[in-house]
Structures are given as C-alpha cells and as structure tokens.
Image (cartoon, rainbow, N blue to C red; front, side, top):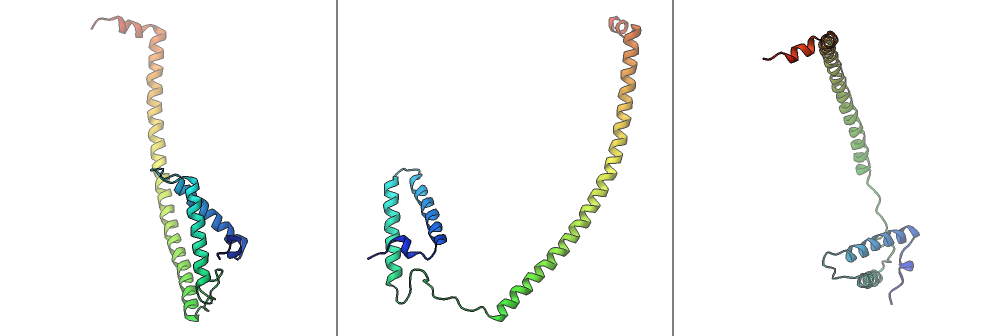
Length: 154
C-alpha cells in the first residue's frame, strides 16, 4: 500500500518543495492552450503520479523513499584541492580583469572630460552668437527698423 506524501518525505522543506512543484504542474495542466485538461484531471494525474513514485521507491531493495541513492560518498582530496585551486584561480583572474577594466574606465573618463571641455567651449561660442543676434533683433524692433525691413517690397 502506498504511503501518503507526508510520510514519504523526510522534512517539511521537502514537503514544501513538492507542494510548489506540483502546484506549478497543476497550473501547467490547467492553462494548456487546448483546454483538454481541467483542474480535477490535473489533481488526479498528480496524485496518481505520487502514489506510483512512492510505490516504486518502496519496492527498491534496501532503499527508503527518503534516500533513494544511499549515503553520499566522501569527496577525494584531489577533487577538493582542484576545487580550491580553481576557486583561487578564478579570484586571481577576476582581479586581473577588474584591474584592466578599471584602467579602461579611467581612460574613457579622461577622454570624456576632454570632450566635455571642447563641447562646453563650442556651446558657449554658440550661445554668445545667438545672444548677439537676439540683441540685434531686439534693437531693430525697438528702433522700428525691423518692421520697416519687413514692409519693403523685394
């Protein structure tokens, strides 16, 4: 006889993971474009799947449903050393790349500062030219020359 789900999981965390997974599965079946599954059908499929999974795990020789693959094997010292070596190599690589990117960024900031000075100078010249033209137009409007020029036939 298949055990209920709360007996086949070892901890509350595993139970919550299963609930999240199977609720996503329910949503997946419910929102099929063809609408060939409804929510009741999804629940029936999931409960059947759970019963089959529990019965399969119980039928395996010497394995419980909490530990289907047995206890973990110890990690060899070579693999541990390789992990640490790659970890340190990754840190060194990242530091060298960060130094390179910092130099490139400093160079780009210096170039942007030079371009800003040139752009500000050009904008100041353009603003002064526009201000002179506006002052000339205002002077012509106040003296009446502007309207006299507009009234002249070409």
